[in-house]
Image (cartoon, rainbow, N blue to C red; front, side, top):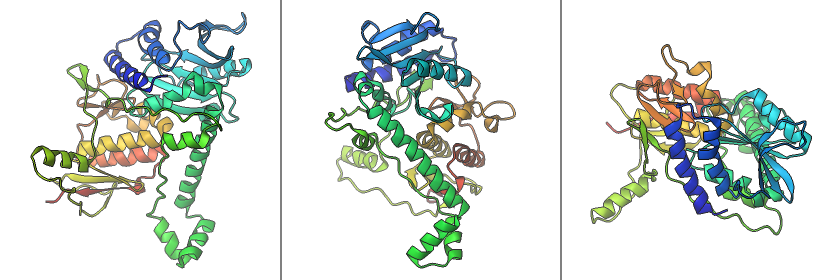
Length: 401
């Protein structure tokens, strides 16, 4: 696998997929134009019959699977293809693929509609919904990093299996710690009280407003943890271009966002002046559930200890959406169908921009951003709670008057 080629292929196919979403692309066209190019960039070219078999039947009595990927002359992953506008979340379809793979002894199952790519650990001893190792769309900045785990080299070793165990453990630990904080667990309160020398009541009160900030591990860090002894270090995946934005029915590239400090330094250098450090933000933190002040714009957004500079309420909204996808990608996918996000006349999130008044592209679809500041803050709180990130961990600050 060539990391540069993979990144470039994903960026190109993302553009094609964005153009044809909502236009009833057939499954065969989806395979030809979207799925097979990405598989080829991963090292699974359909012309290599030693590695790839289409319409594969393990025995004549089985229904065919769209693709079987081989390593050491045995199938190691099944790929189930769907048409571009068909959801990959259908429980019955997922269960069928996992059941077939389990009977044949295939450890991994990849389900994709060319835009969404979901990888499942077939042998994991949990319910089907928790077997999913990752769920990405081609618009996600880290799509190439995740998909690179399905190359022939990684499927032949034990690194992918180790990665699944690590991610499963990460999720369990994060959920447990968040629950203990939310419940102000007596054992946890007592432990903290002893360590810091505070009364139990003071610790319990502090836990009402604090939320643990569990920083997300980088893929490079995970790679080092799950590497098989003696295996080569994974090649770095270059960042693909930023997700395409809808423009007059088509798409256009948006330059990748730079950190605030870097943008300011660059502007100063272009003017021939010495770069200056960014100005500090001094506004007080305001809980996300608190109604906004009239005629004021936000300066920062903070979620679970991470802070970003923002320039408008729409900017704050889009940042919160992307963060929700980053920390809980599986749960995030439900926002496009959940009743919580259905407005009186239209949905707030949709897979296509057709039914939105002012759509902006987000991972997996589009969001309506023609909303008041108060509605945006309410939506951010609702979204965070929906994906399992307590809204109480989110605050914002204002730009100076």
